[in-house]
Image (spheres, rainbow, N blue to C red):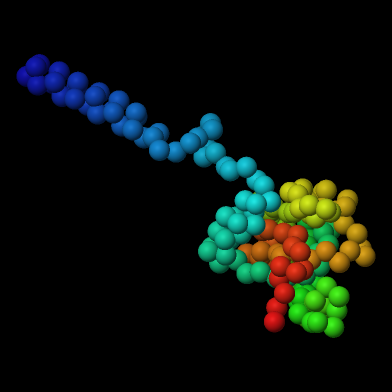
Length: 161
């Protein structure tokens, strides 16, 4: 009886050690969380935006301004459309769709801003740098009533026919 109990105890200990060793394999972790990729403009425009679309996000192209109220931010979006036209020197014009939307900026929302090159910035930096006369277009990824991604875009890359 003692021999069976001893062997059972050894077997249970070996199983427990094996489970502990195997449980953490296969994922790169930092502390208790999975390592997040570097948040770059390329990552946001490719993988992240596609993941949002896969998860059910809708998109809206337009001019964006942010407003801070306490700890939250509101994105004011005025929808625009880039229309191809040979009558303009750039080959397009920006048309107003007469649609406006206010969306809460998600707690994990990402934003890009474009001066000469696009860069990832915080909501506070966006507010400091936004210009009321700016004609910078943004592609906004909306999940319900929340703006999760605001990407600065070049109008020539979003021309509709």
